[in-house]
Length: 124
Image (tube, rainbow, N blue to C red; front, side, top):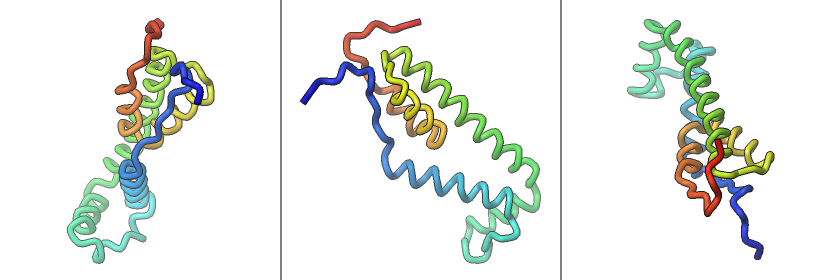
């Protein structure tokens, strides 16, 4: 098996984080854009909290939804910079890091930050 020089390093984040972030952002999107369709009474304490927040702070939740995606975009841009700093040159690999970090945030960026580039000088 050929050794990789690190220019195409990619690691998928764990299934736990993929499921957790997807369900959380999905639920948040549902609460912000289709609050009348949420089954509040069947969700227990989460439903009660969601109903309260939707009724009392819907505009804040709406702005928070956009802020959450803006933060994910910033994290994805940071991932591109970190790829450059760690010598990950492959365009397809950089795209994978960007998309994964945009979708799953710090769960992905943390994996990239932990990566120790072997012997390549940091670029500026």
